[in-house]
Image 1 (cartoon, rainbow, N blue to C red):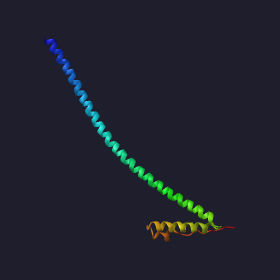
Image 2 (spheres, helix red, strand yellow):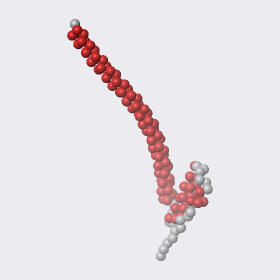
Image 3 (tube, rainbow, N blue to C red):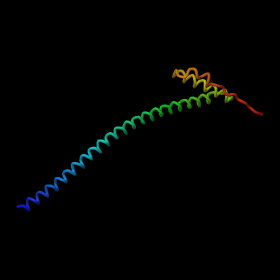
Image 4 (cartoon, one colour):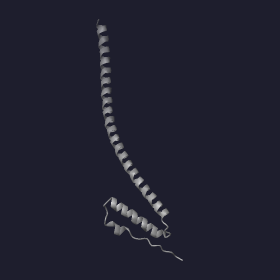
Amino acid sequence: MAILTGYFYLRLDSTKAKLEKSQSDLALALKINENNQEKLKELNQIHKTELKALNEANNQKNQVQERVQYVKEYIYKSNENNITKLFNDVVDRLWDANSTSSNQNRNSKSKNSARTTNIKSS
């Protein structure tokens, strides 16, 4: 009977050790899972921010493309042969369009709109 009791005690001790190891592994897995969930939330937030930035960049690219198309059409429709005058006209039109769409940098037009002169050397 003592042998049987010893056997069951050893077996119980072994089972208890396996249970403690399983509980420890489970606690570790749960902690890792929580950390992964936090990282996933952070990555989702970063992804949303990047998507917003990408969308804004796309909108700005589209605006630039529209202005380039406008300039191409203006050059095509204009019979102006003087490139400098044509360039200045286009800059004025774009500047006026930009200043009417946003009221920022009102005073910088006089500083930034220096005219290009067409210098021809013989």
